[in-house]
Length: 234
Image (cartoon, rainbow, N blue to C red; front, side, top):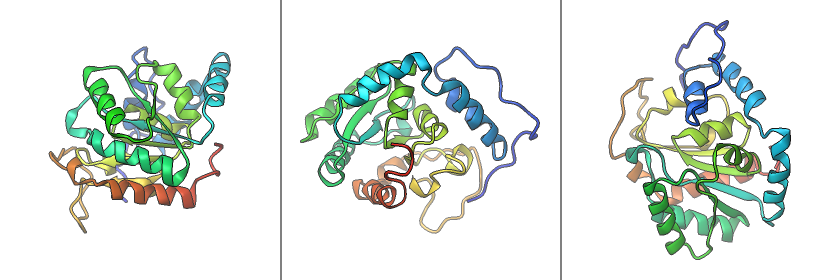
């Protein structure tokens, strides 16, 4: 998969921002090897802090199964997947892979609406941590054995933390947005047409997320189980 040429290697990531949306946008600006610098910088400054480890331990101890965190919505509806299909994935993760699903993200109207649908449709109710805040979100992702997400901030945070991420990409070009270096074998790519060698570009493609079916995501879960389960610190 092609990677865009980025800023000079000597260019350092920008200073830390107070905005919660910053980390994934910062990572997105850098292409390898610059992305590696940004990732290492993120990991050093945004891993759970010592004072947050107790909260993380209590959270992890309250769940008896490996955690699969699902990011159920983004800031842009065109990037979102259907909550009904998330519910199907949640049930499969529970029944076939022995995992506890945790819903993560903010508490916007769209995210809460998606949460209601998932909770209504899923036979095995996920645990919801929507609106837990950025720092708790980092702790939850860090405690996860697997993260599933469309193209949005928590996806890139999880990659920076070294947690396997199944990326559901259709609206944005994954050759430009990543994830880079790691977990490209877990990308569900609905951006390109079958067999298309599309270029790196900023072009967005509408209506592509609906191409992703539940079976496509579960196929990537099977890849995760074979290649990553139990091998990434969780």
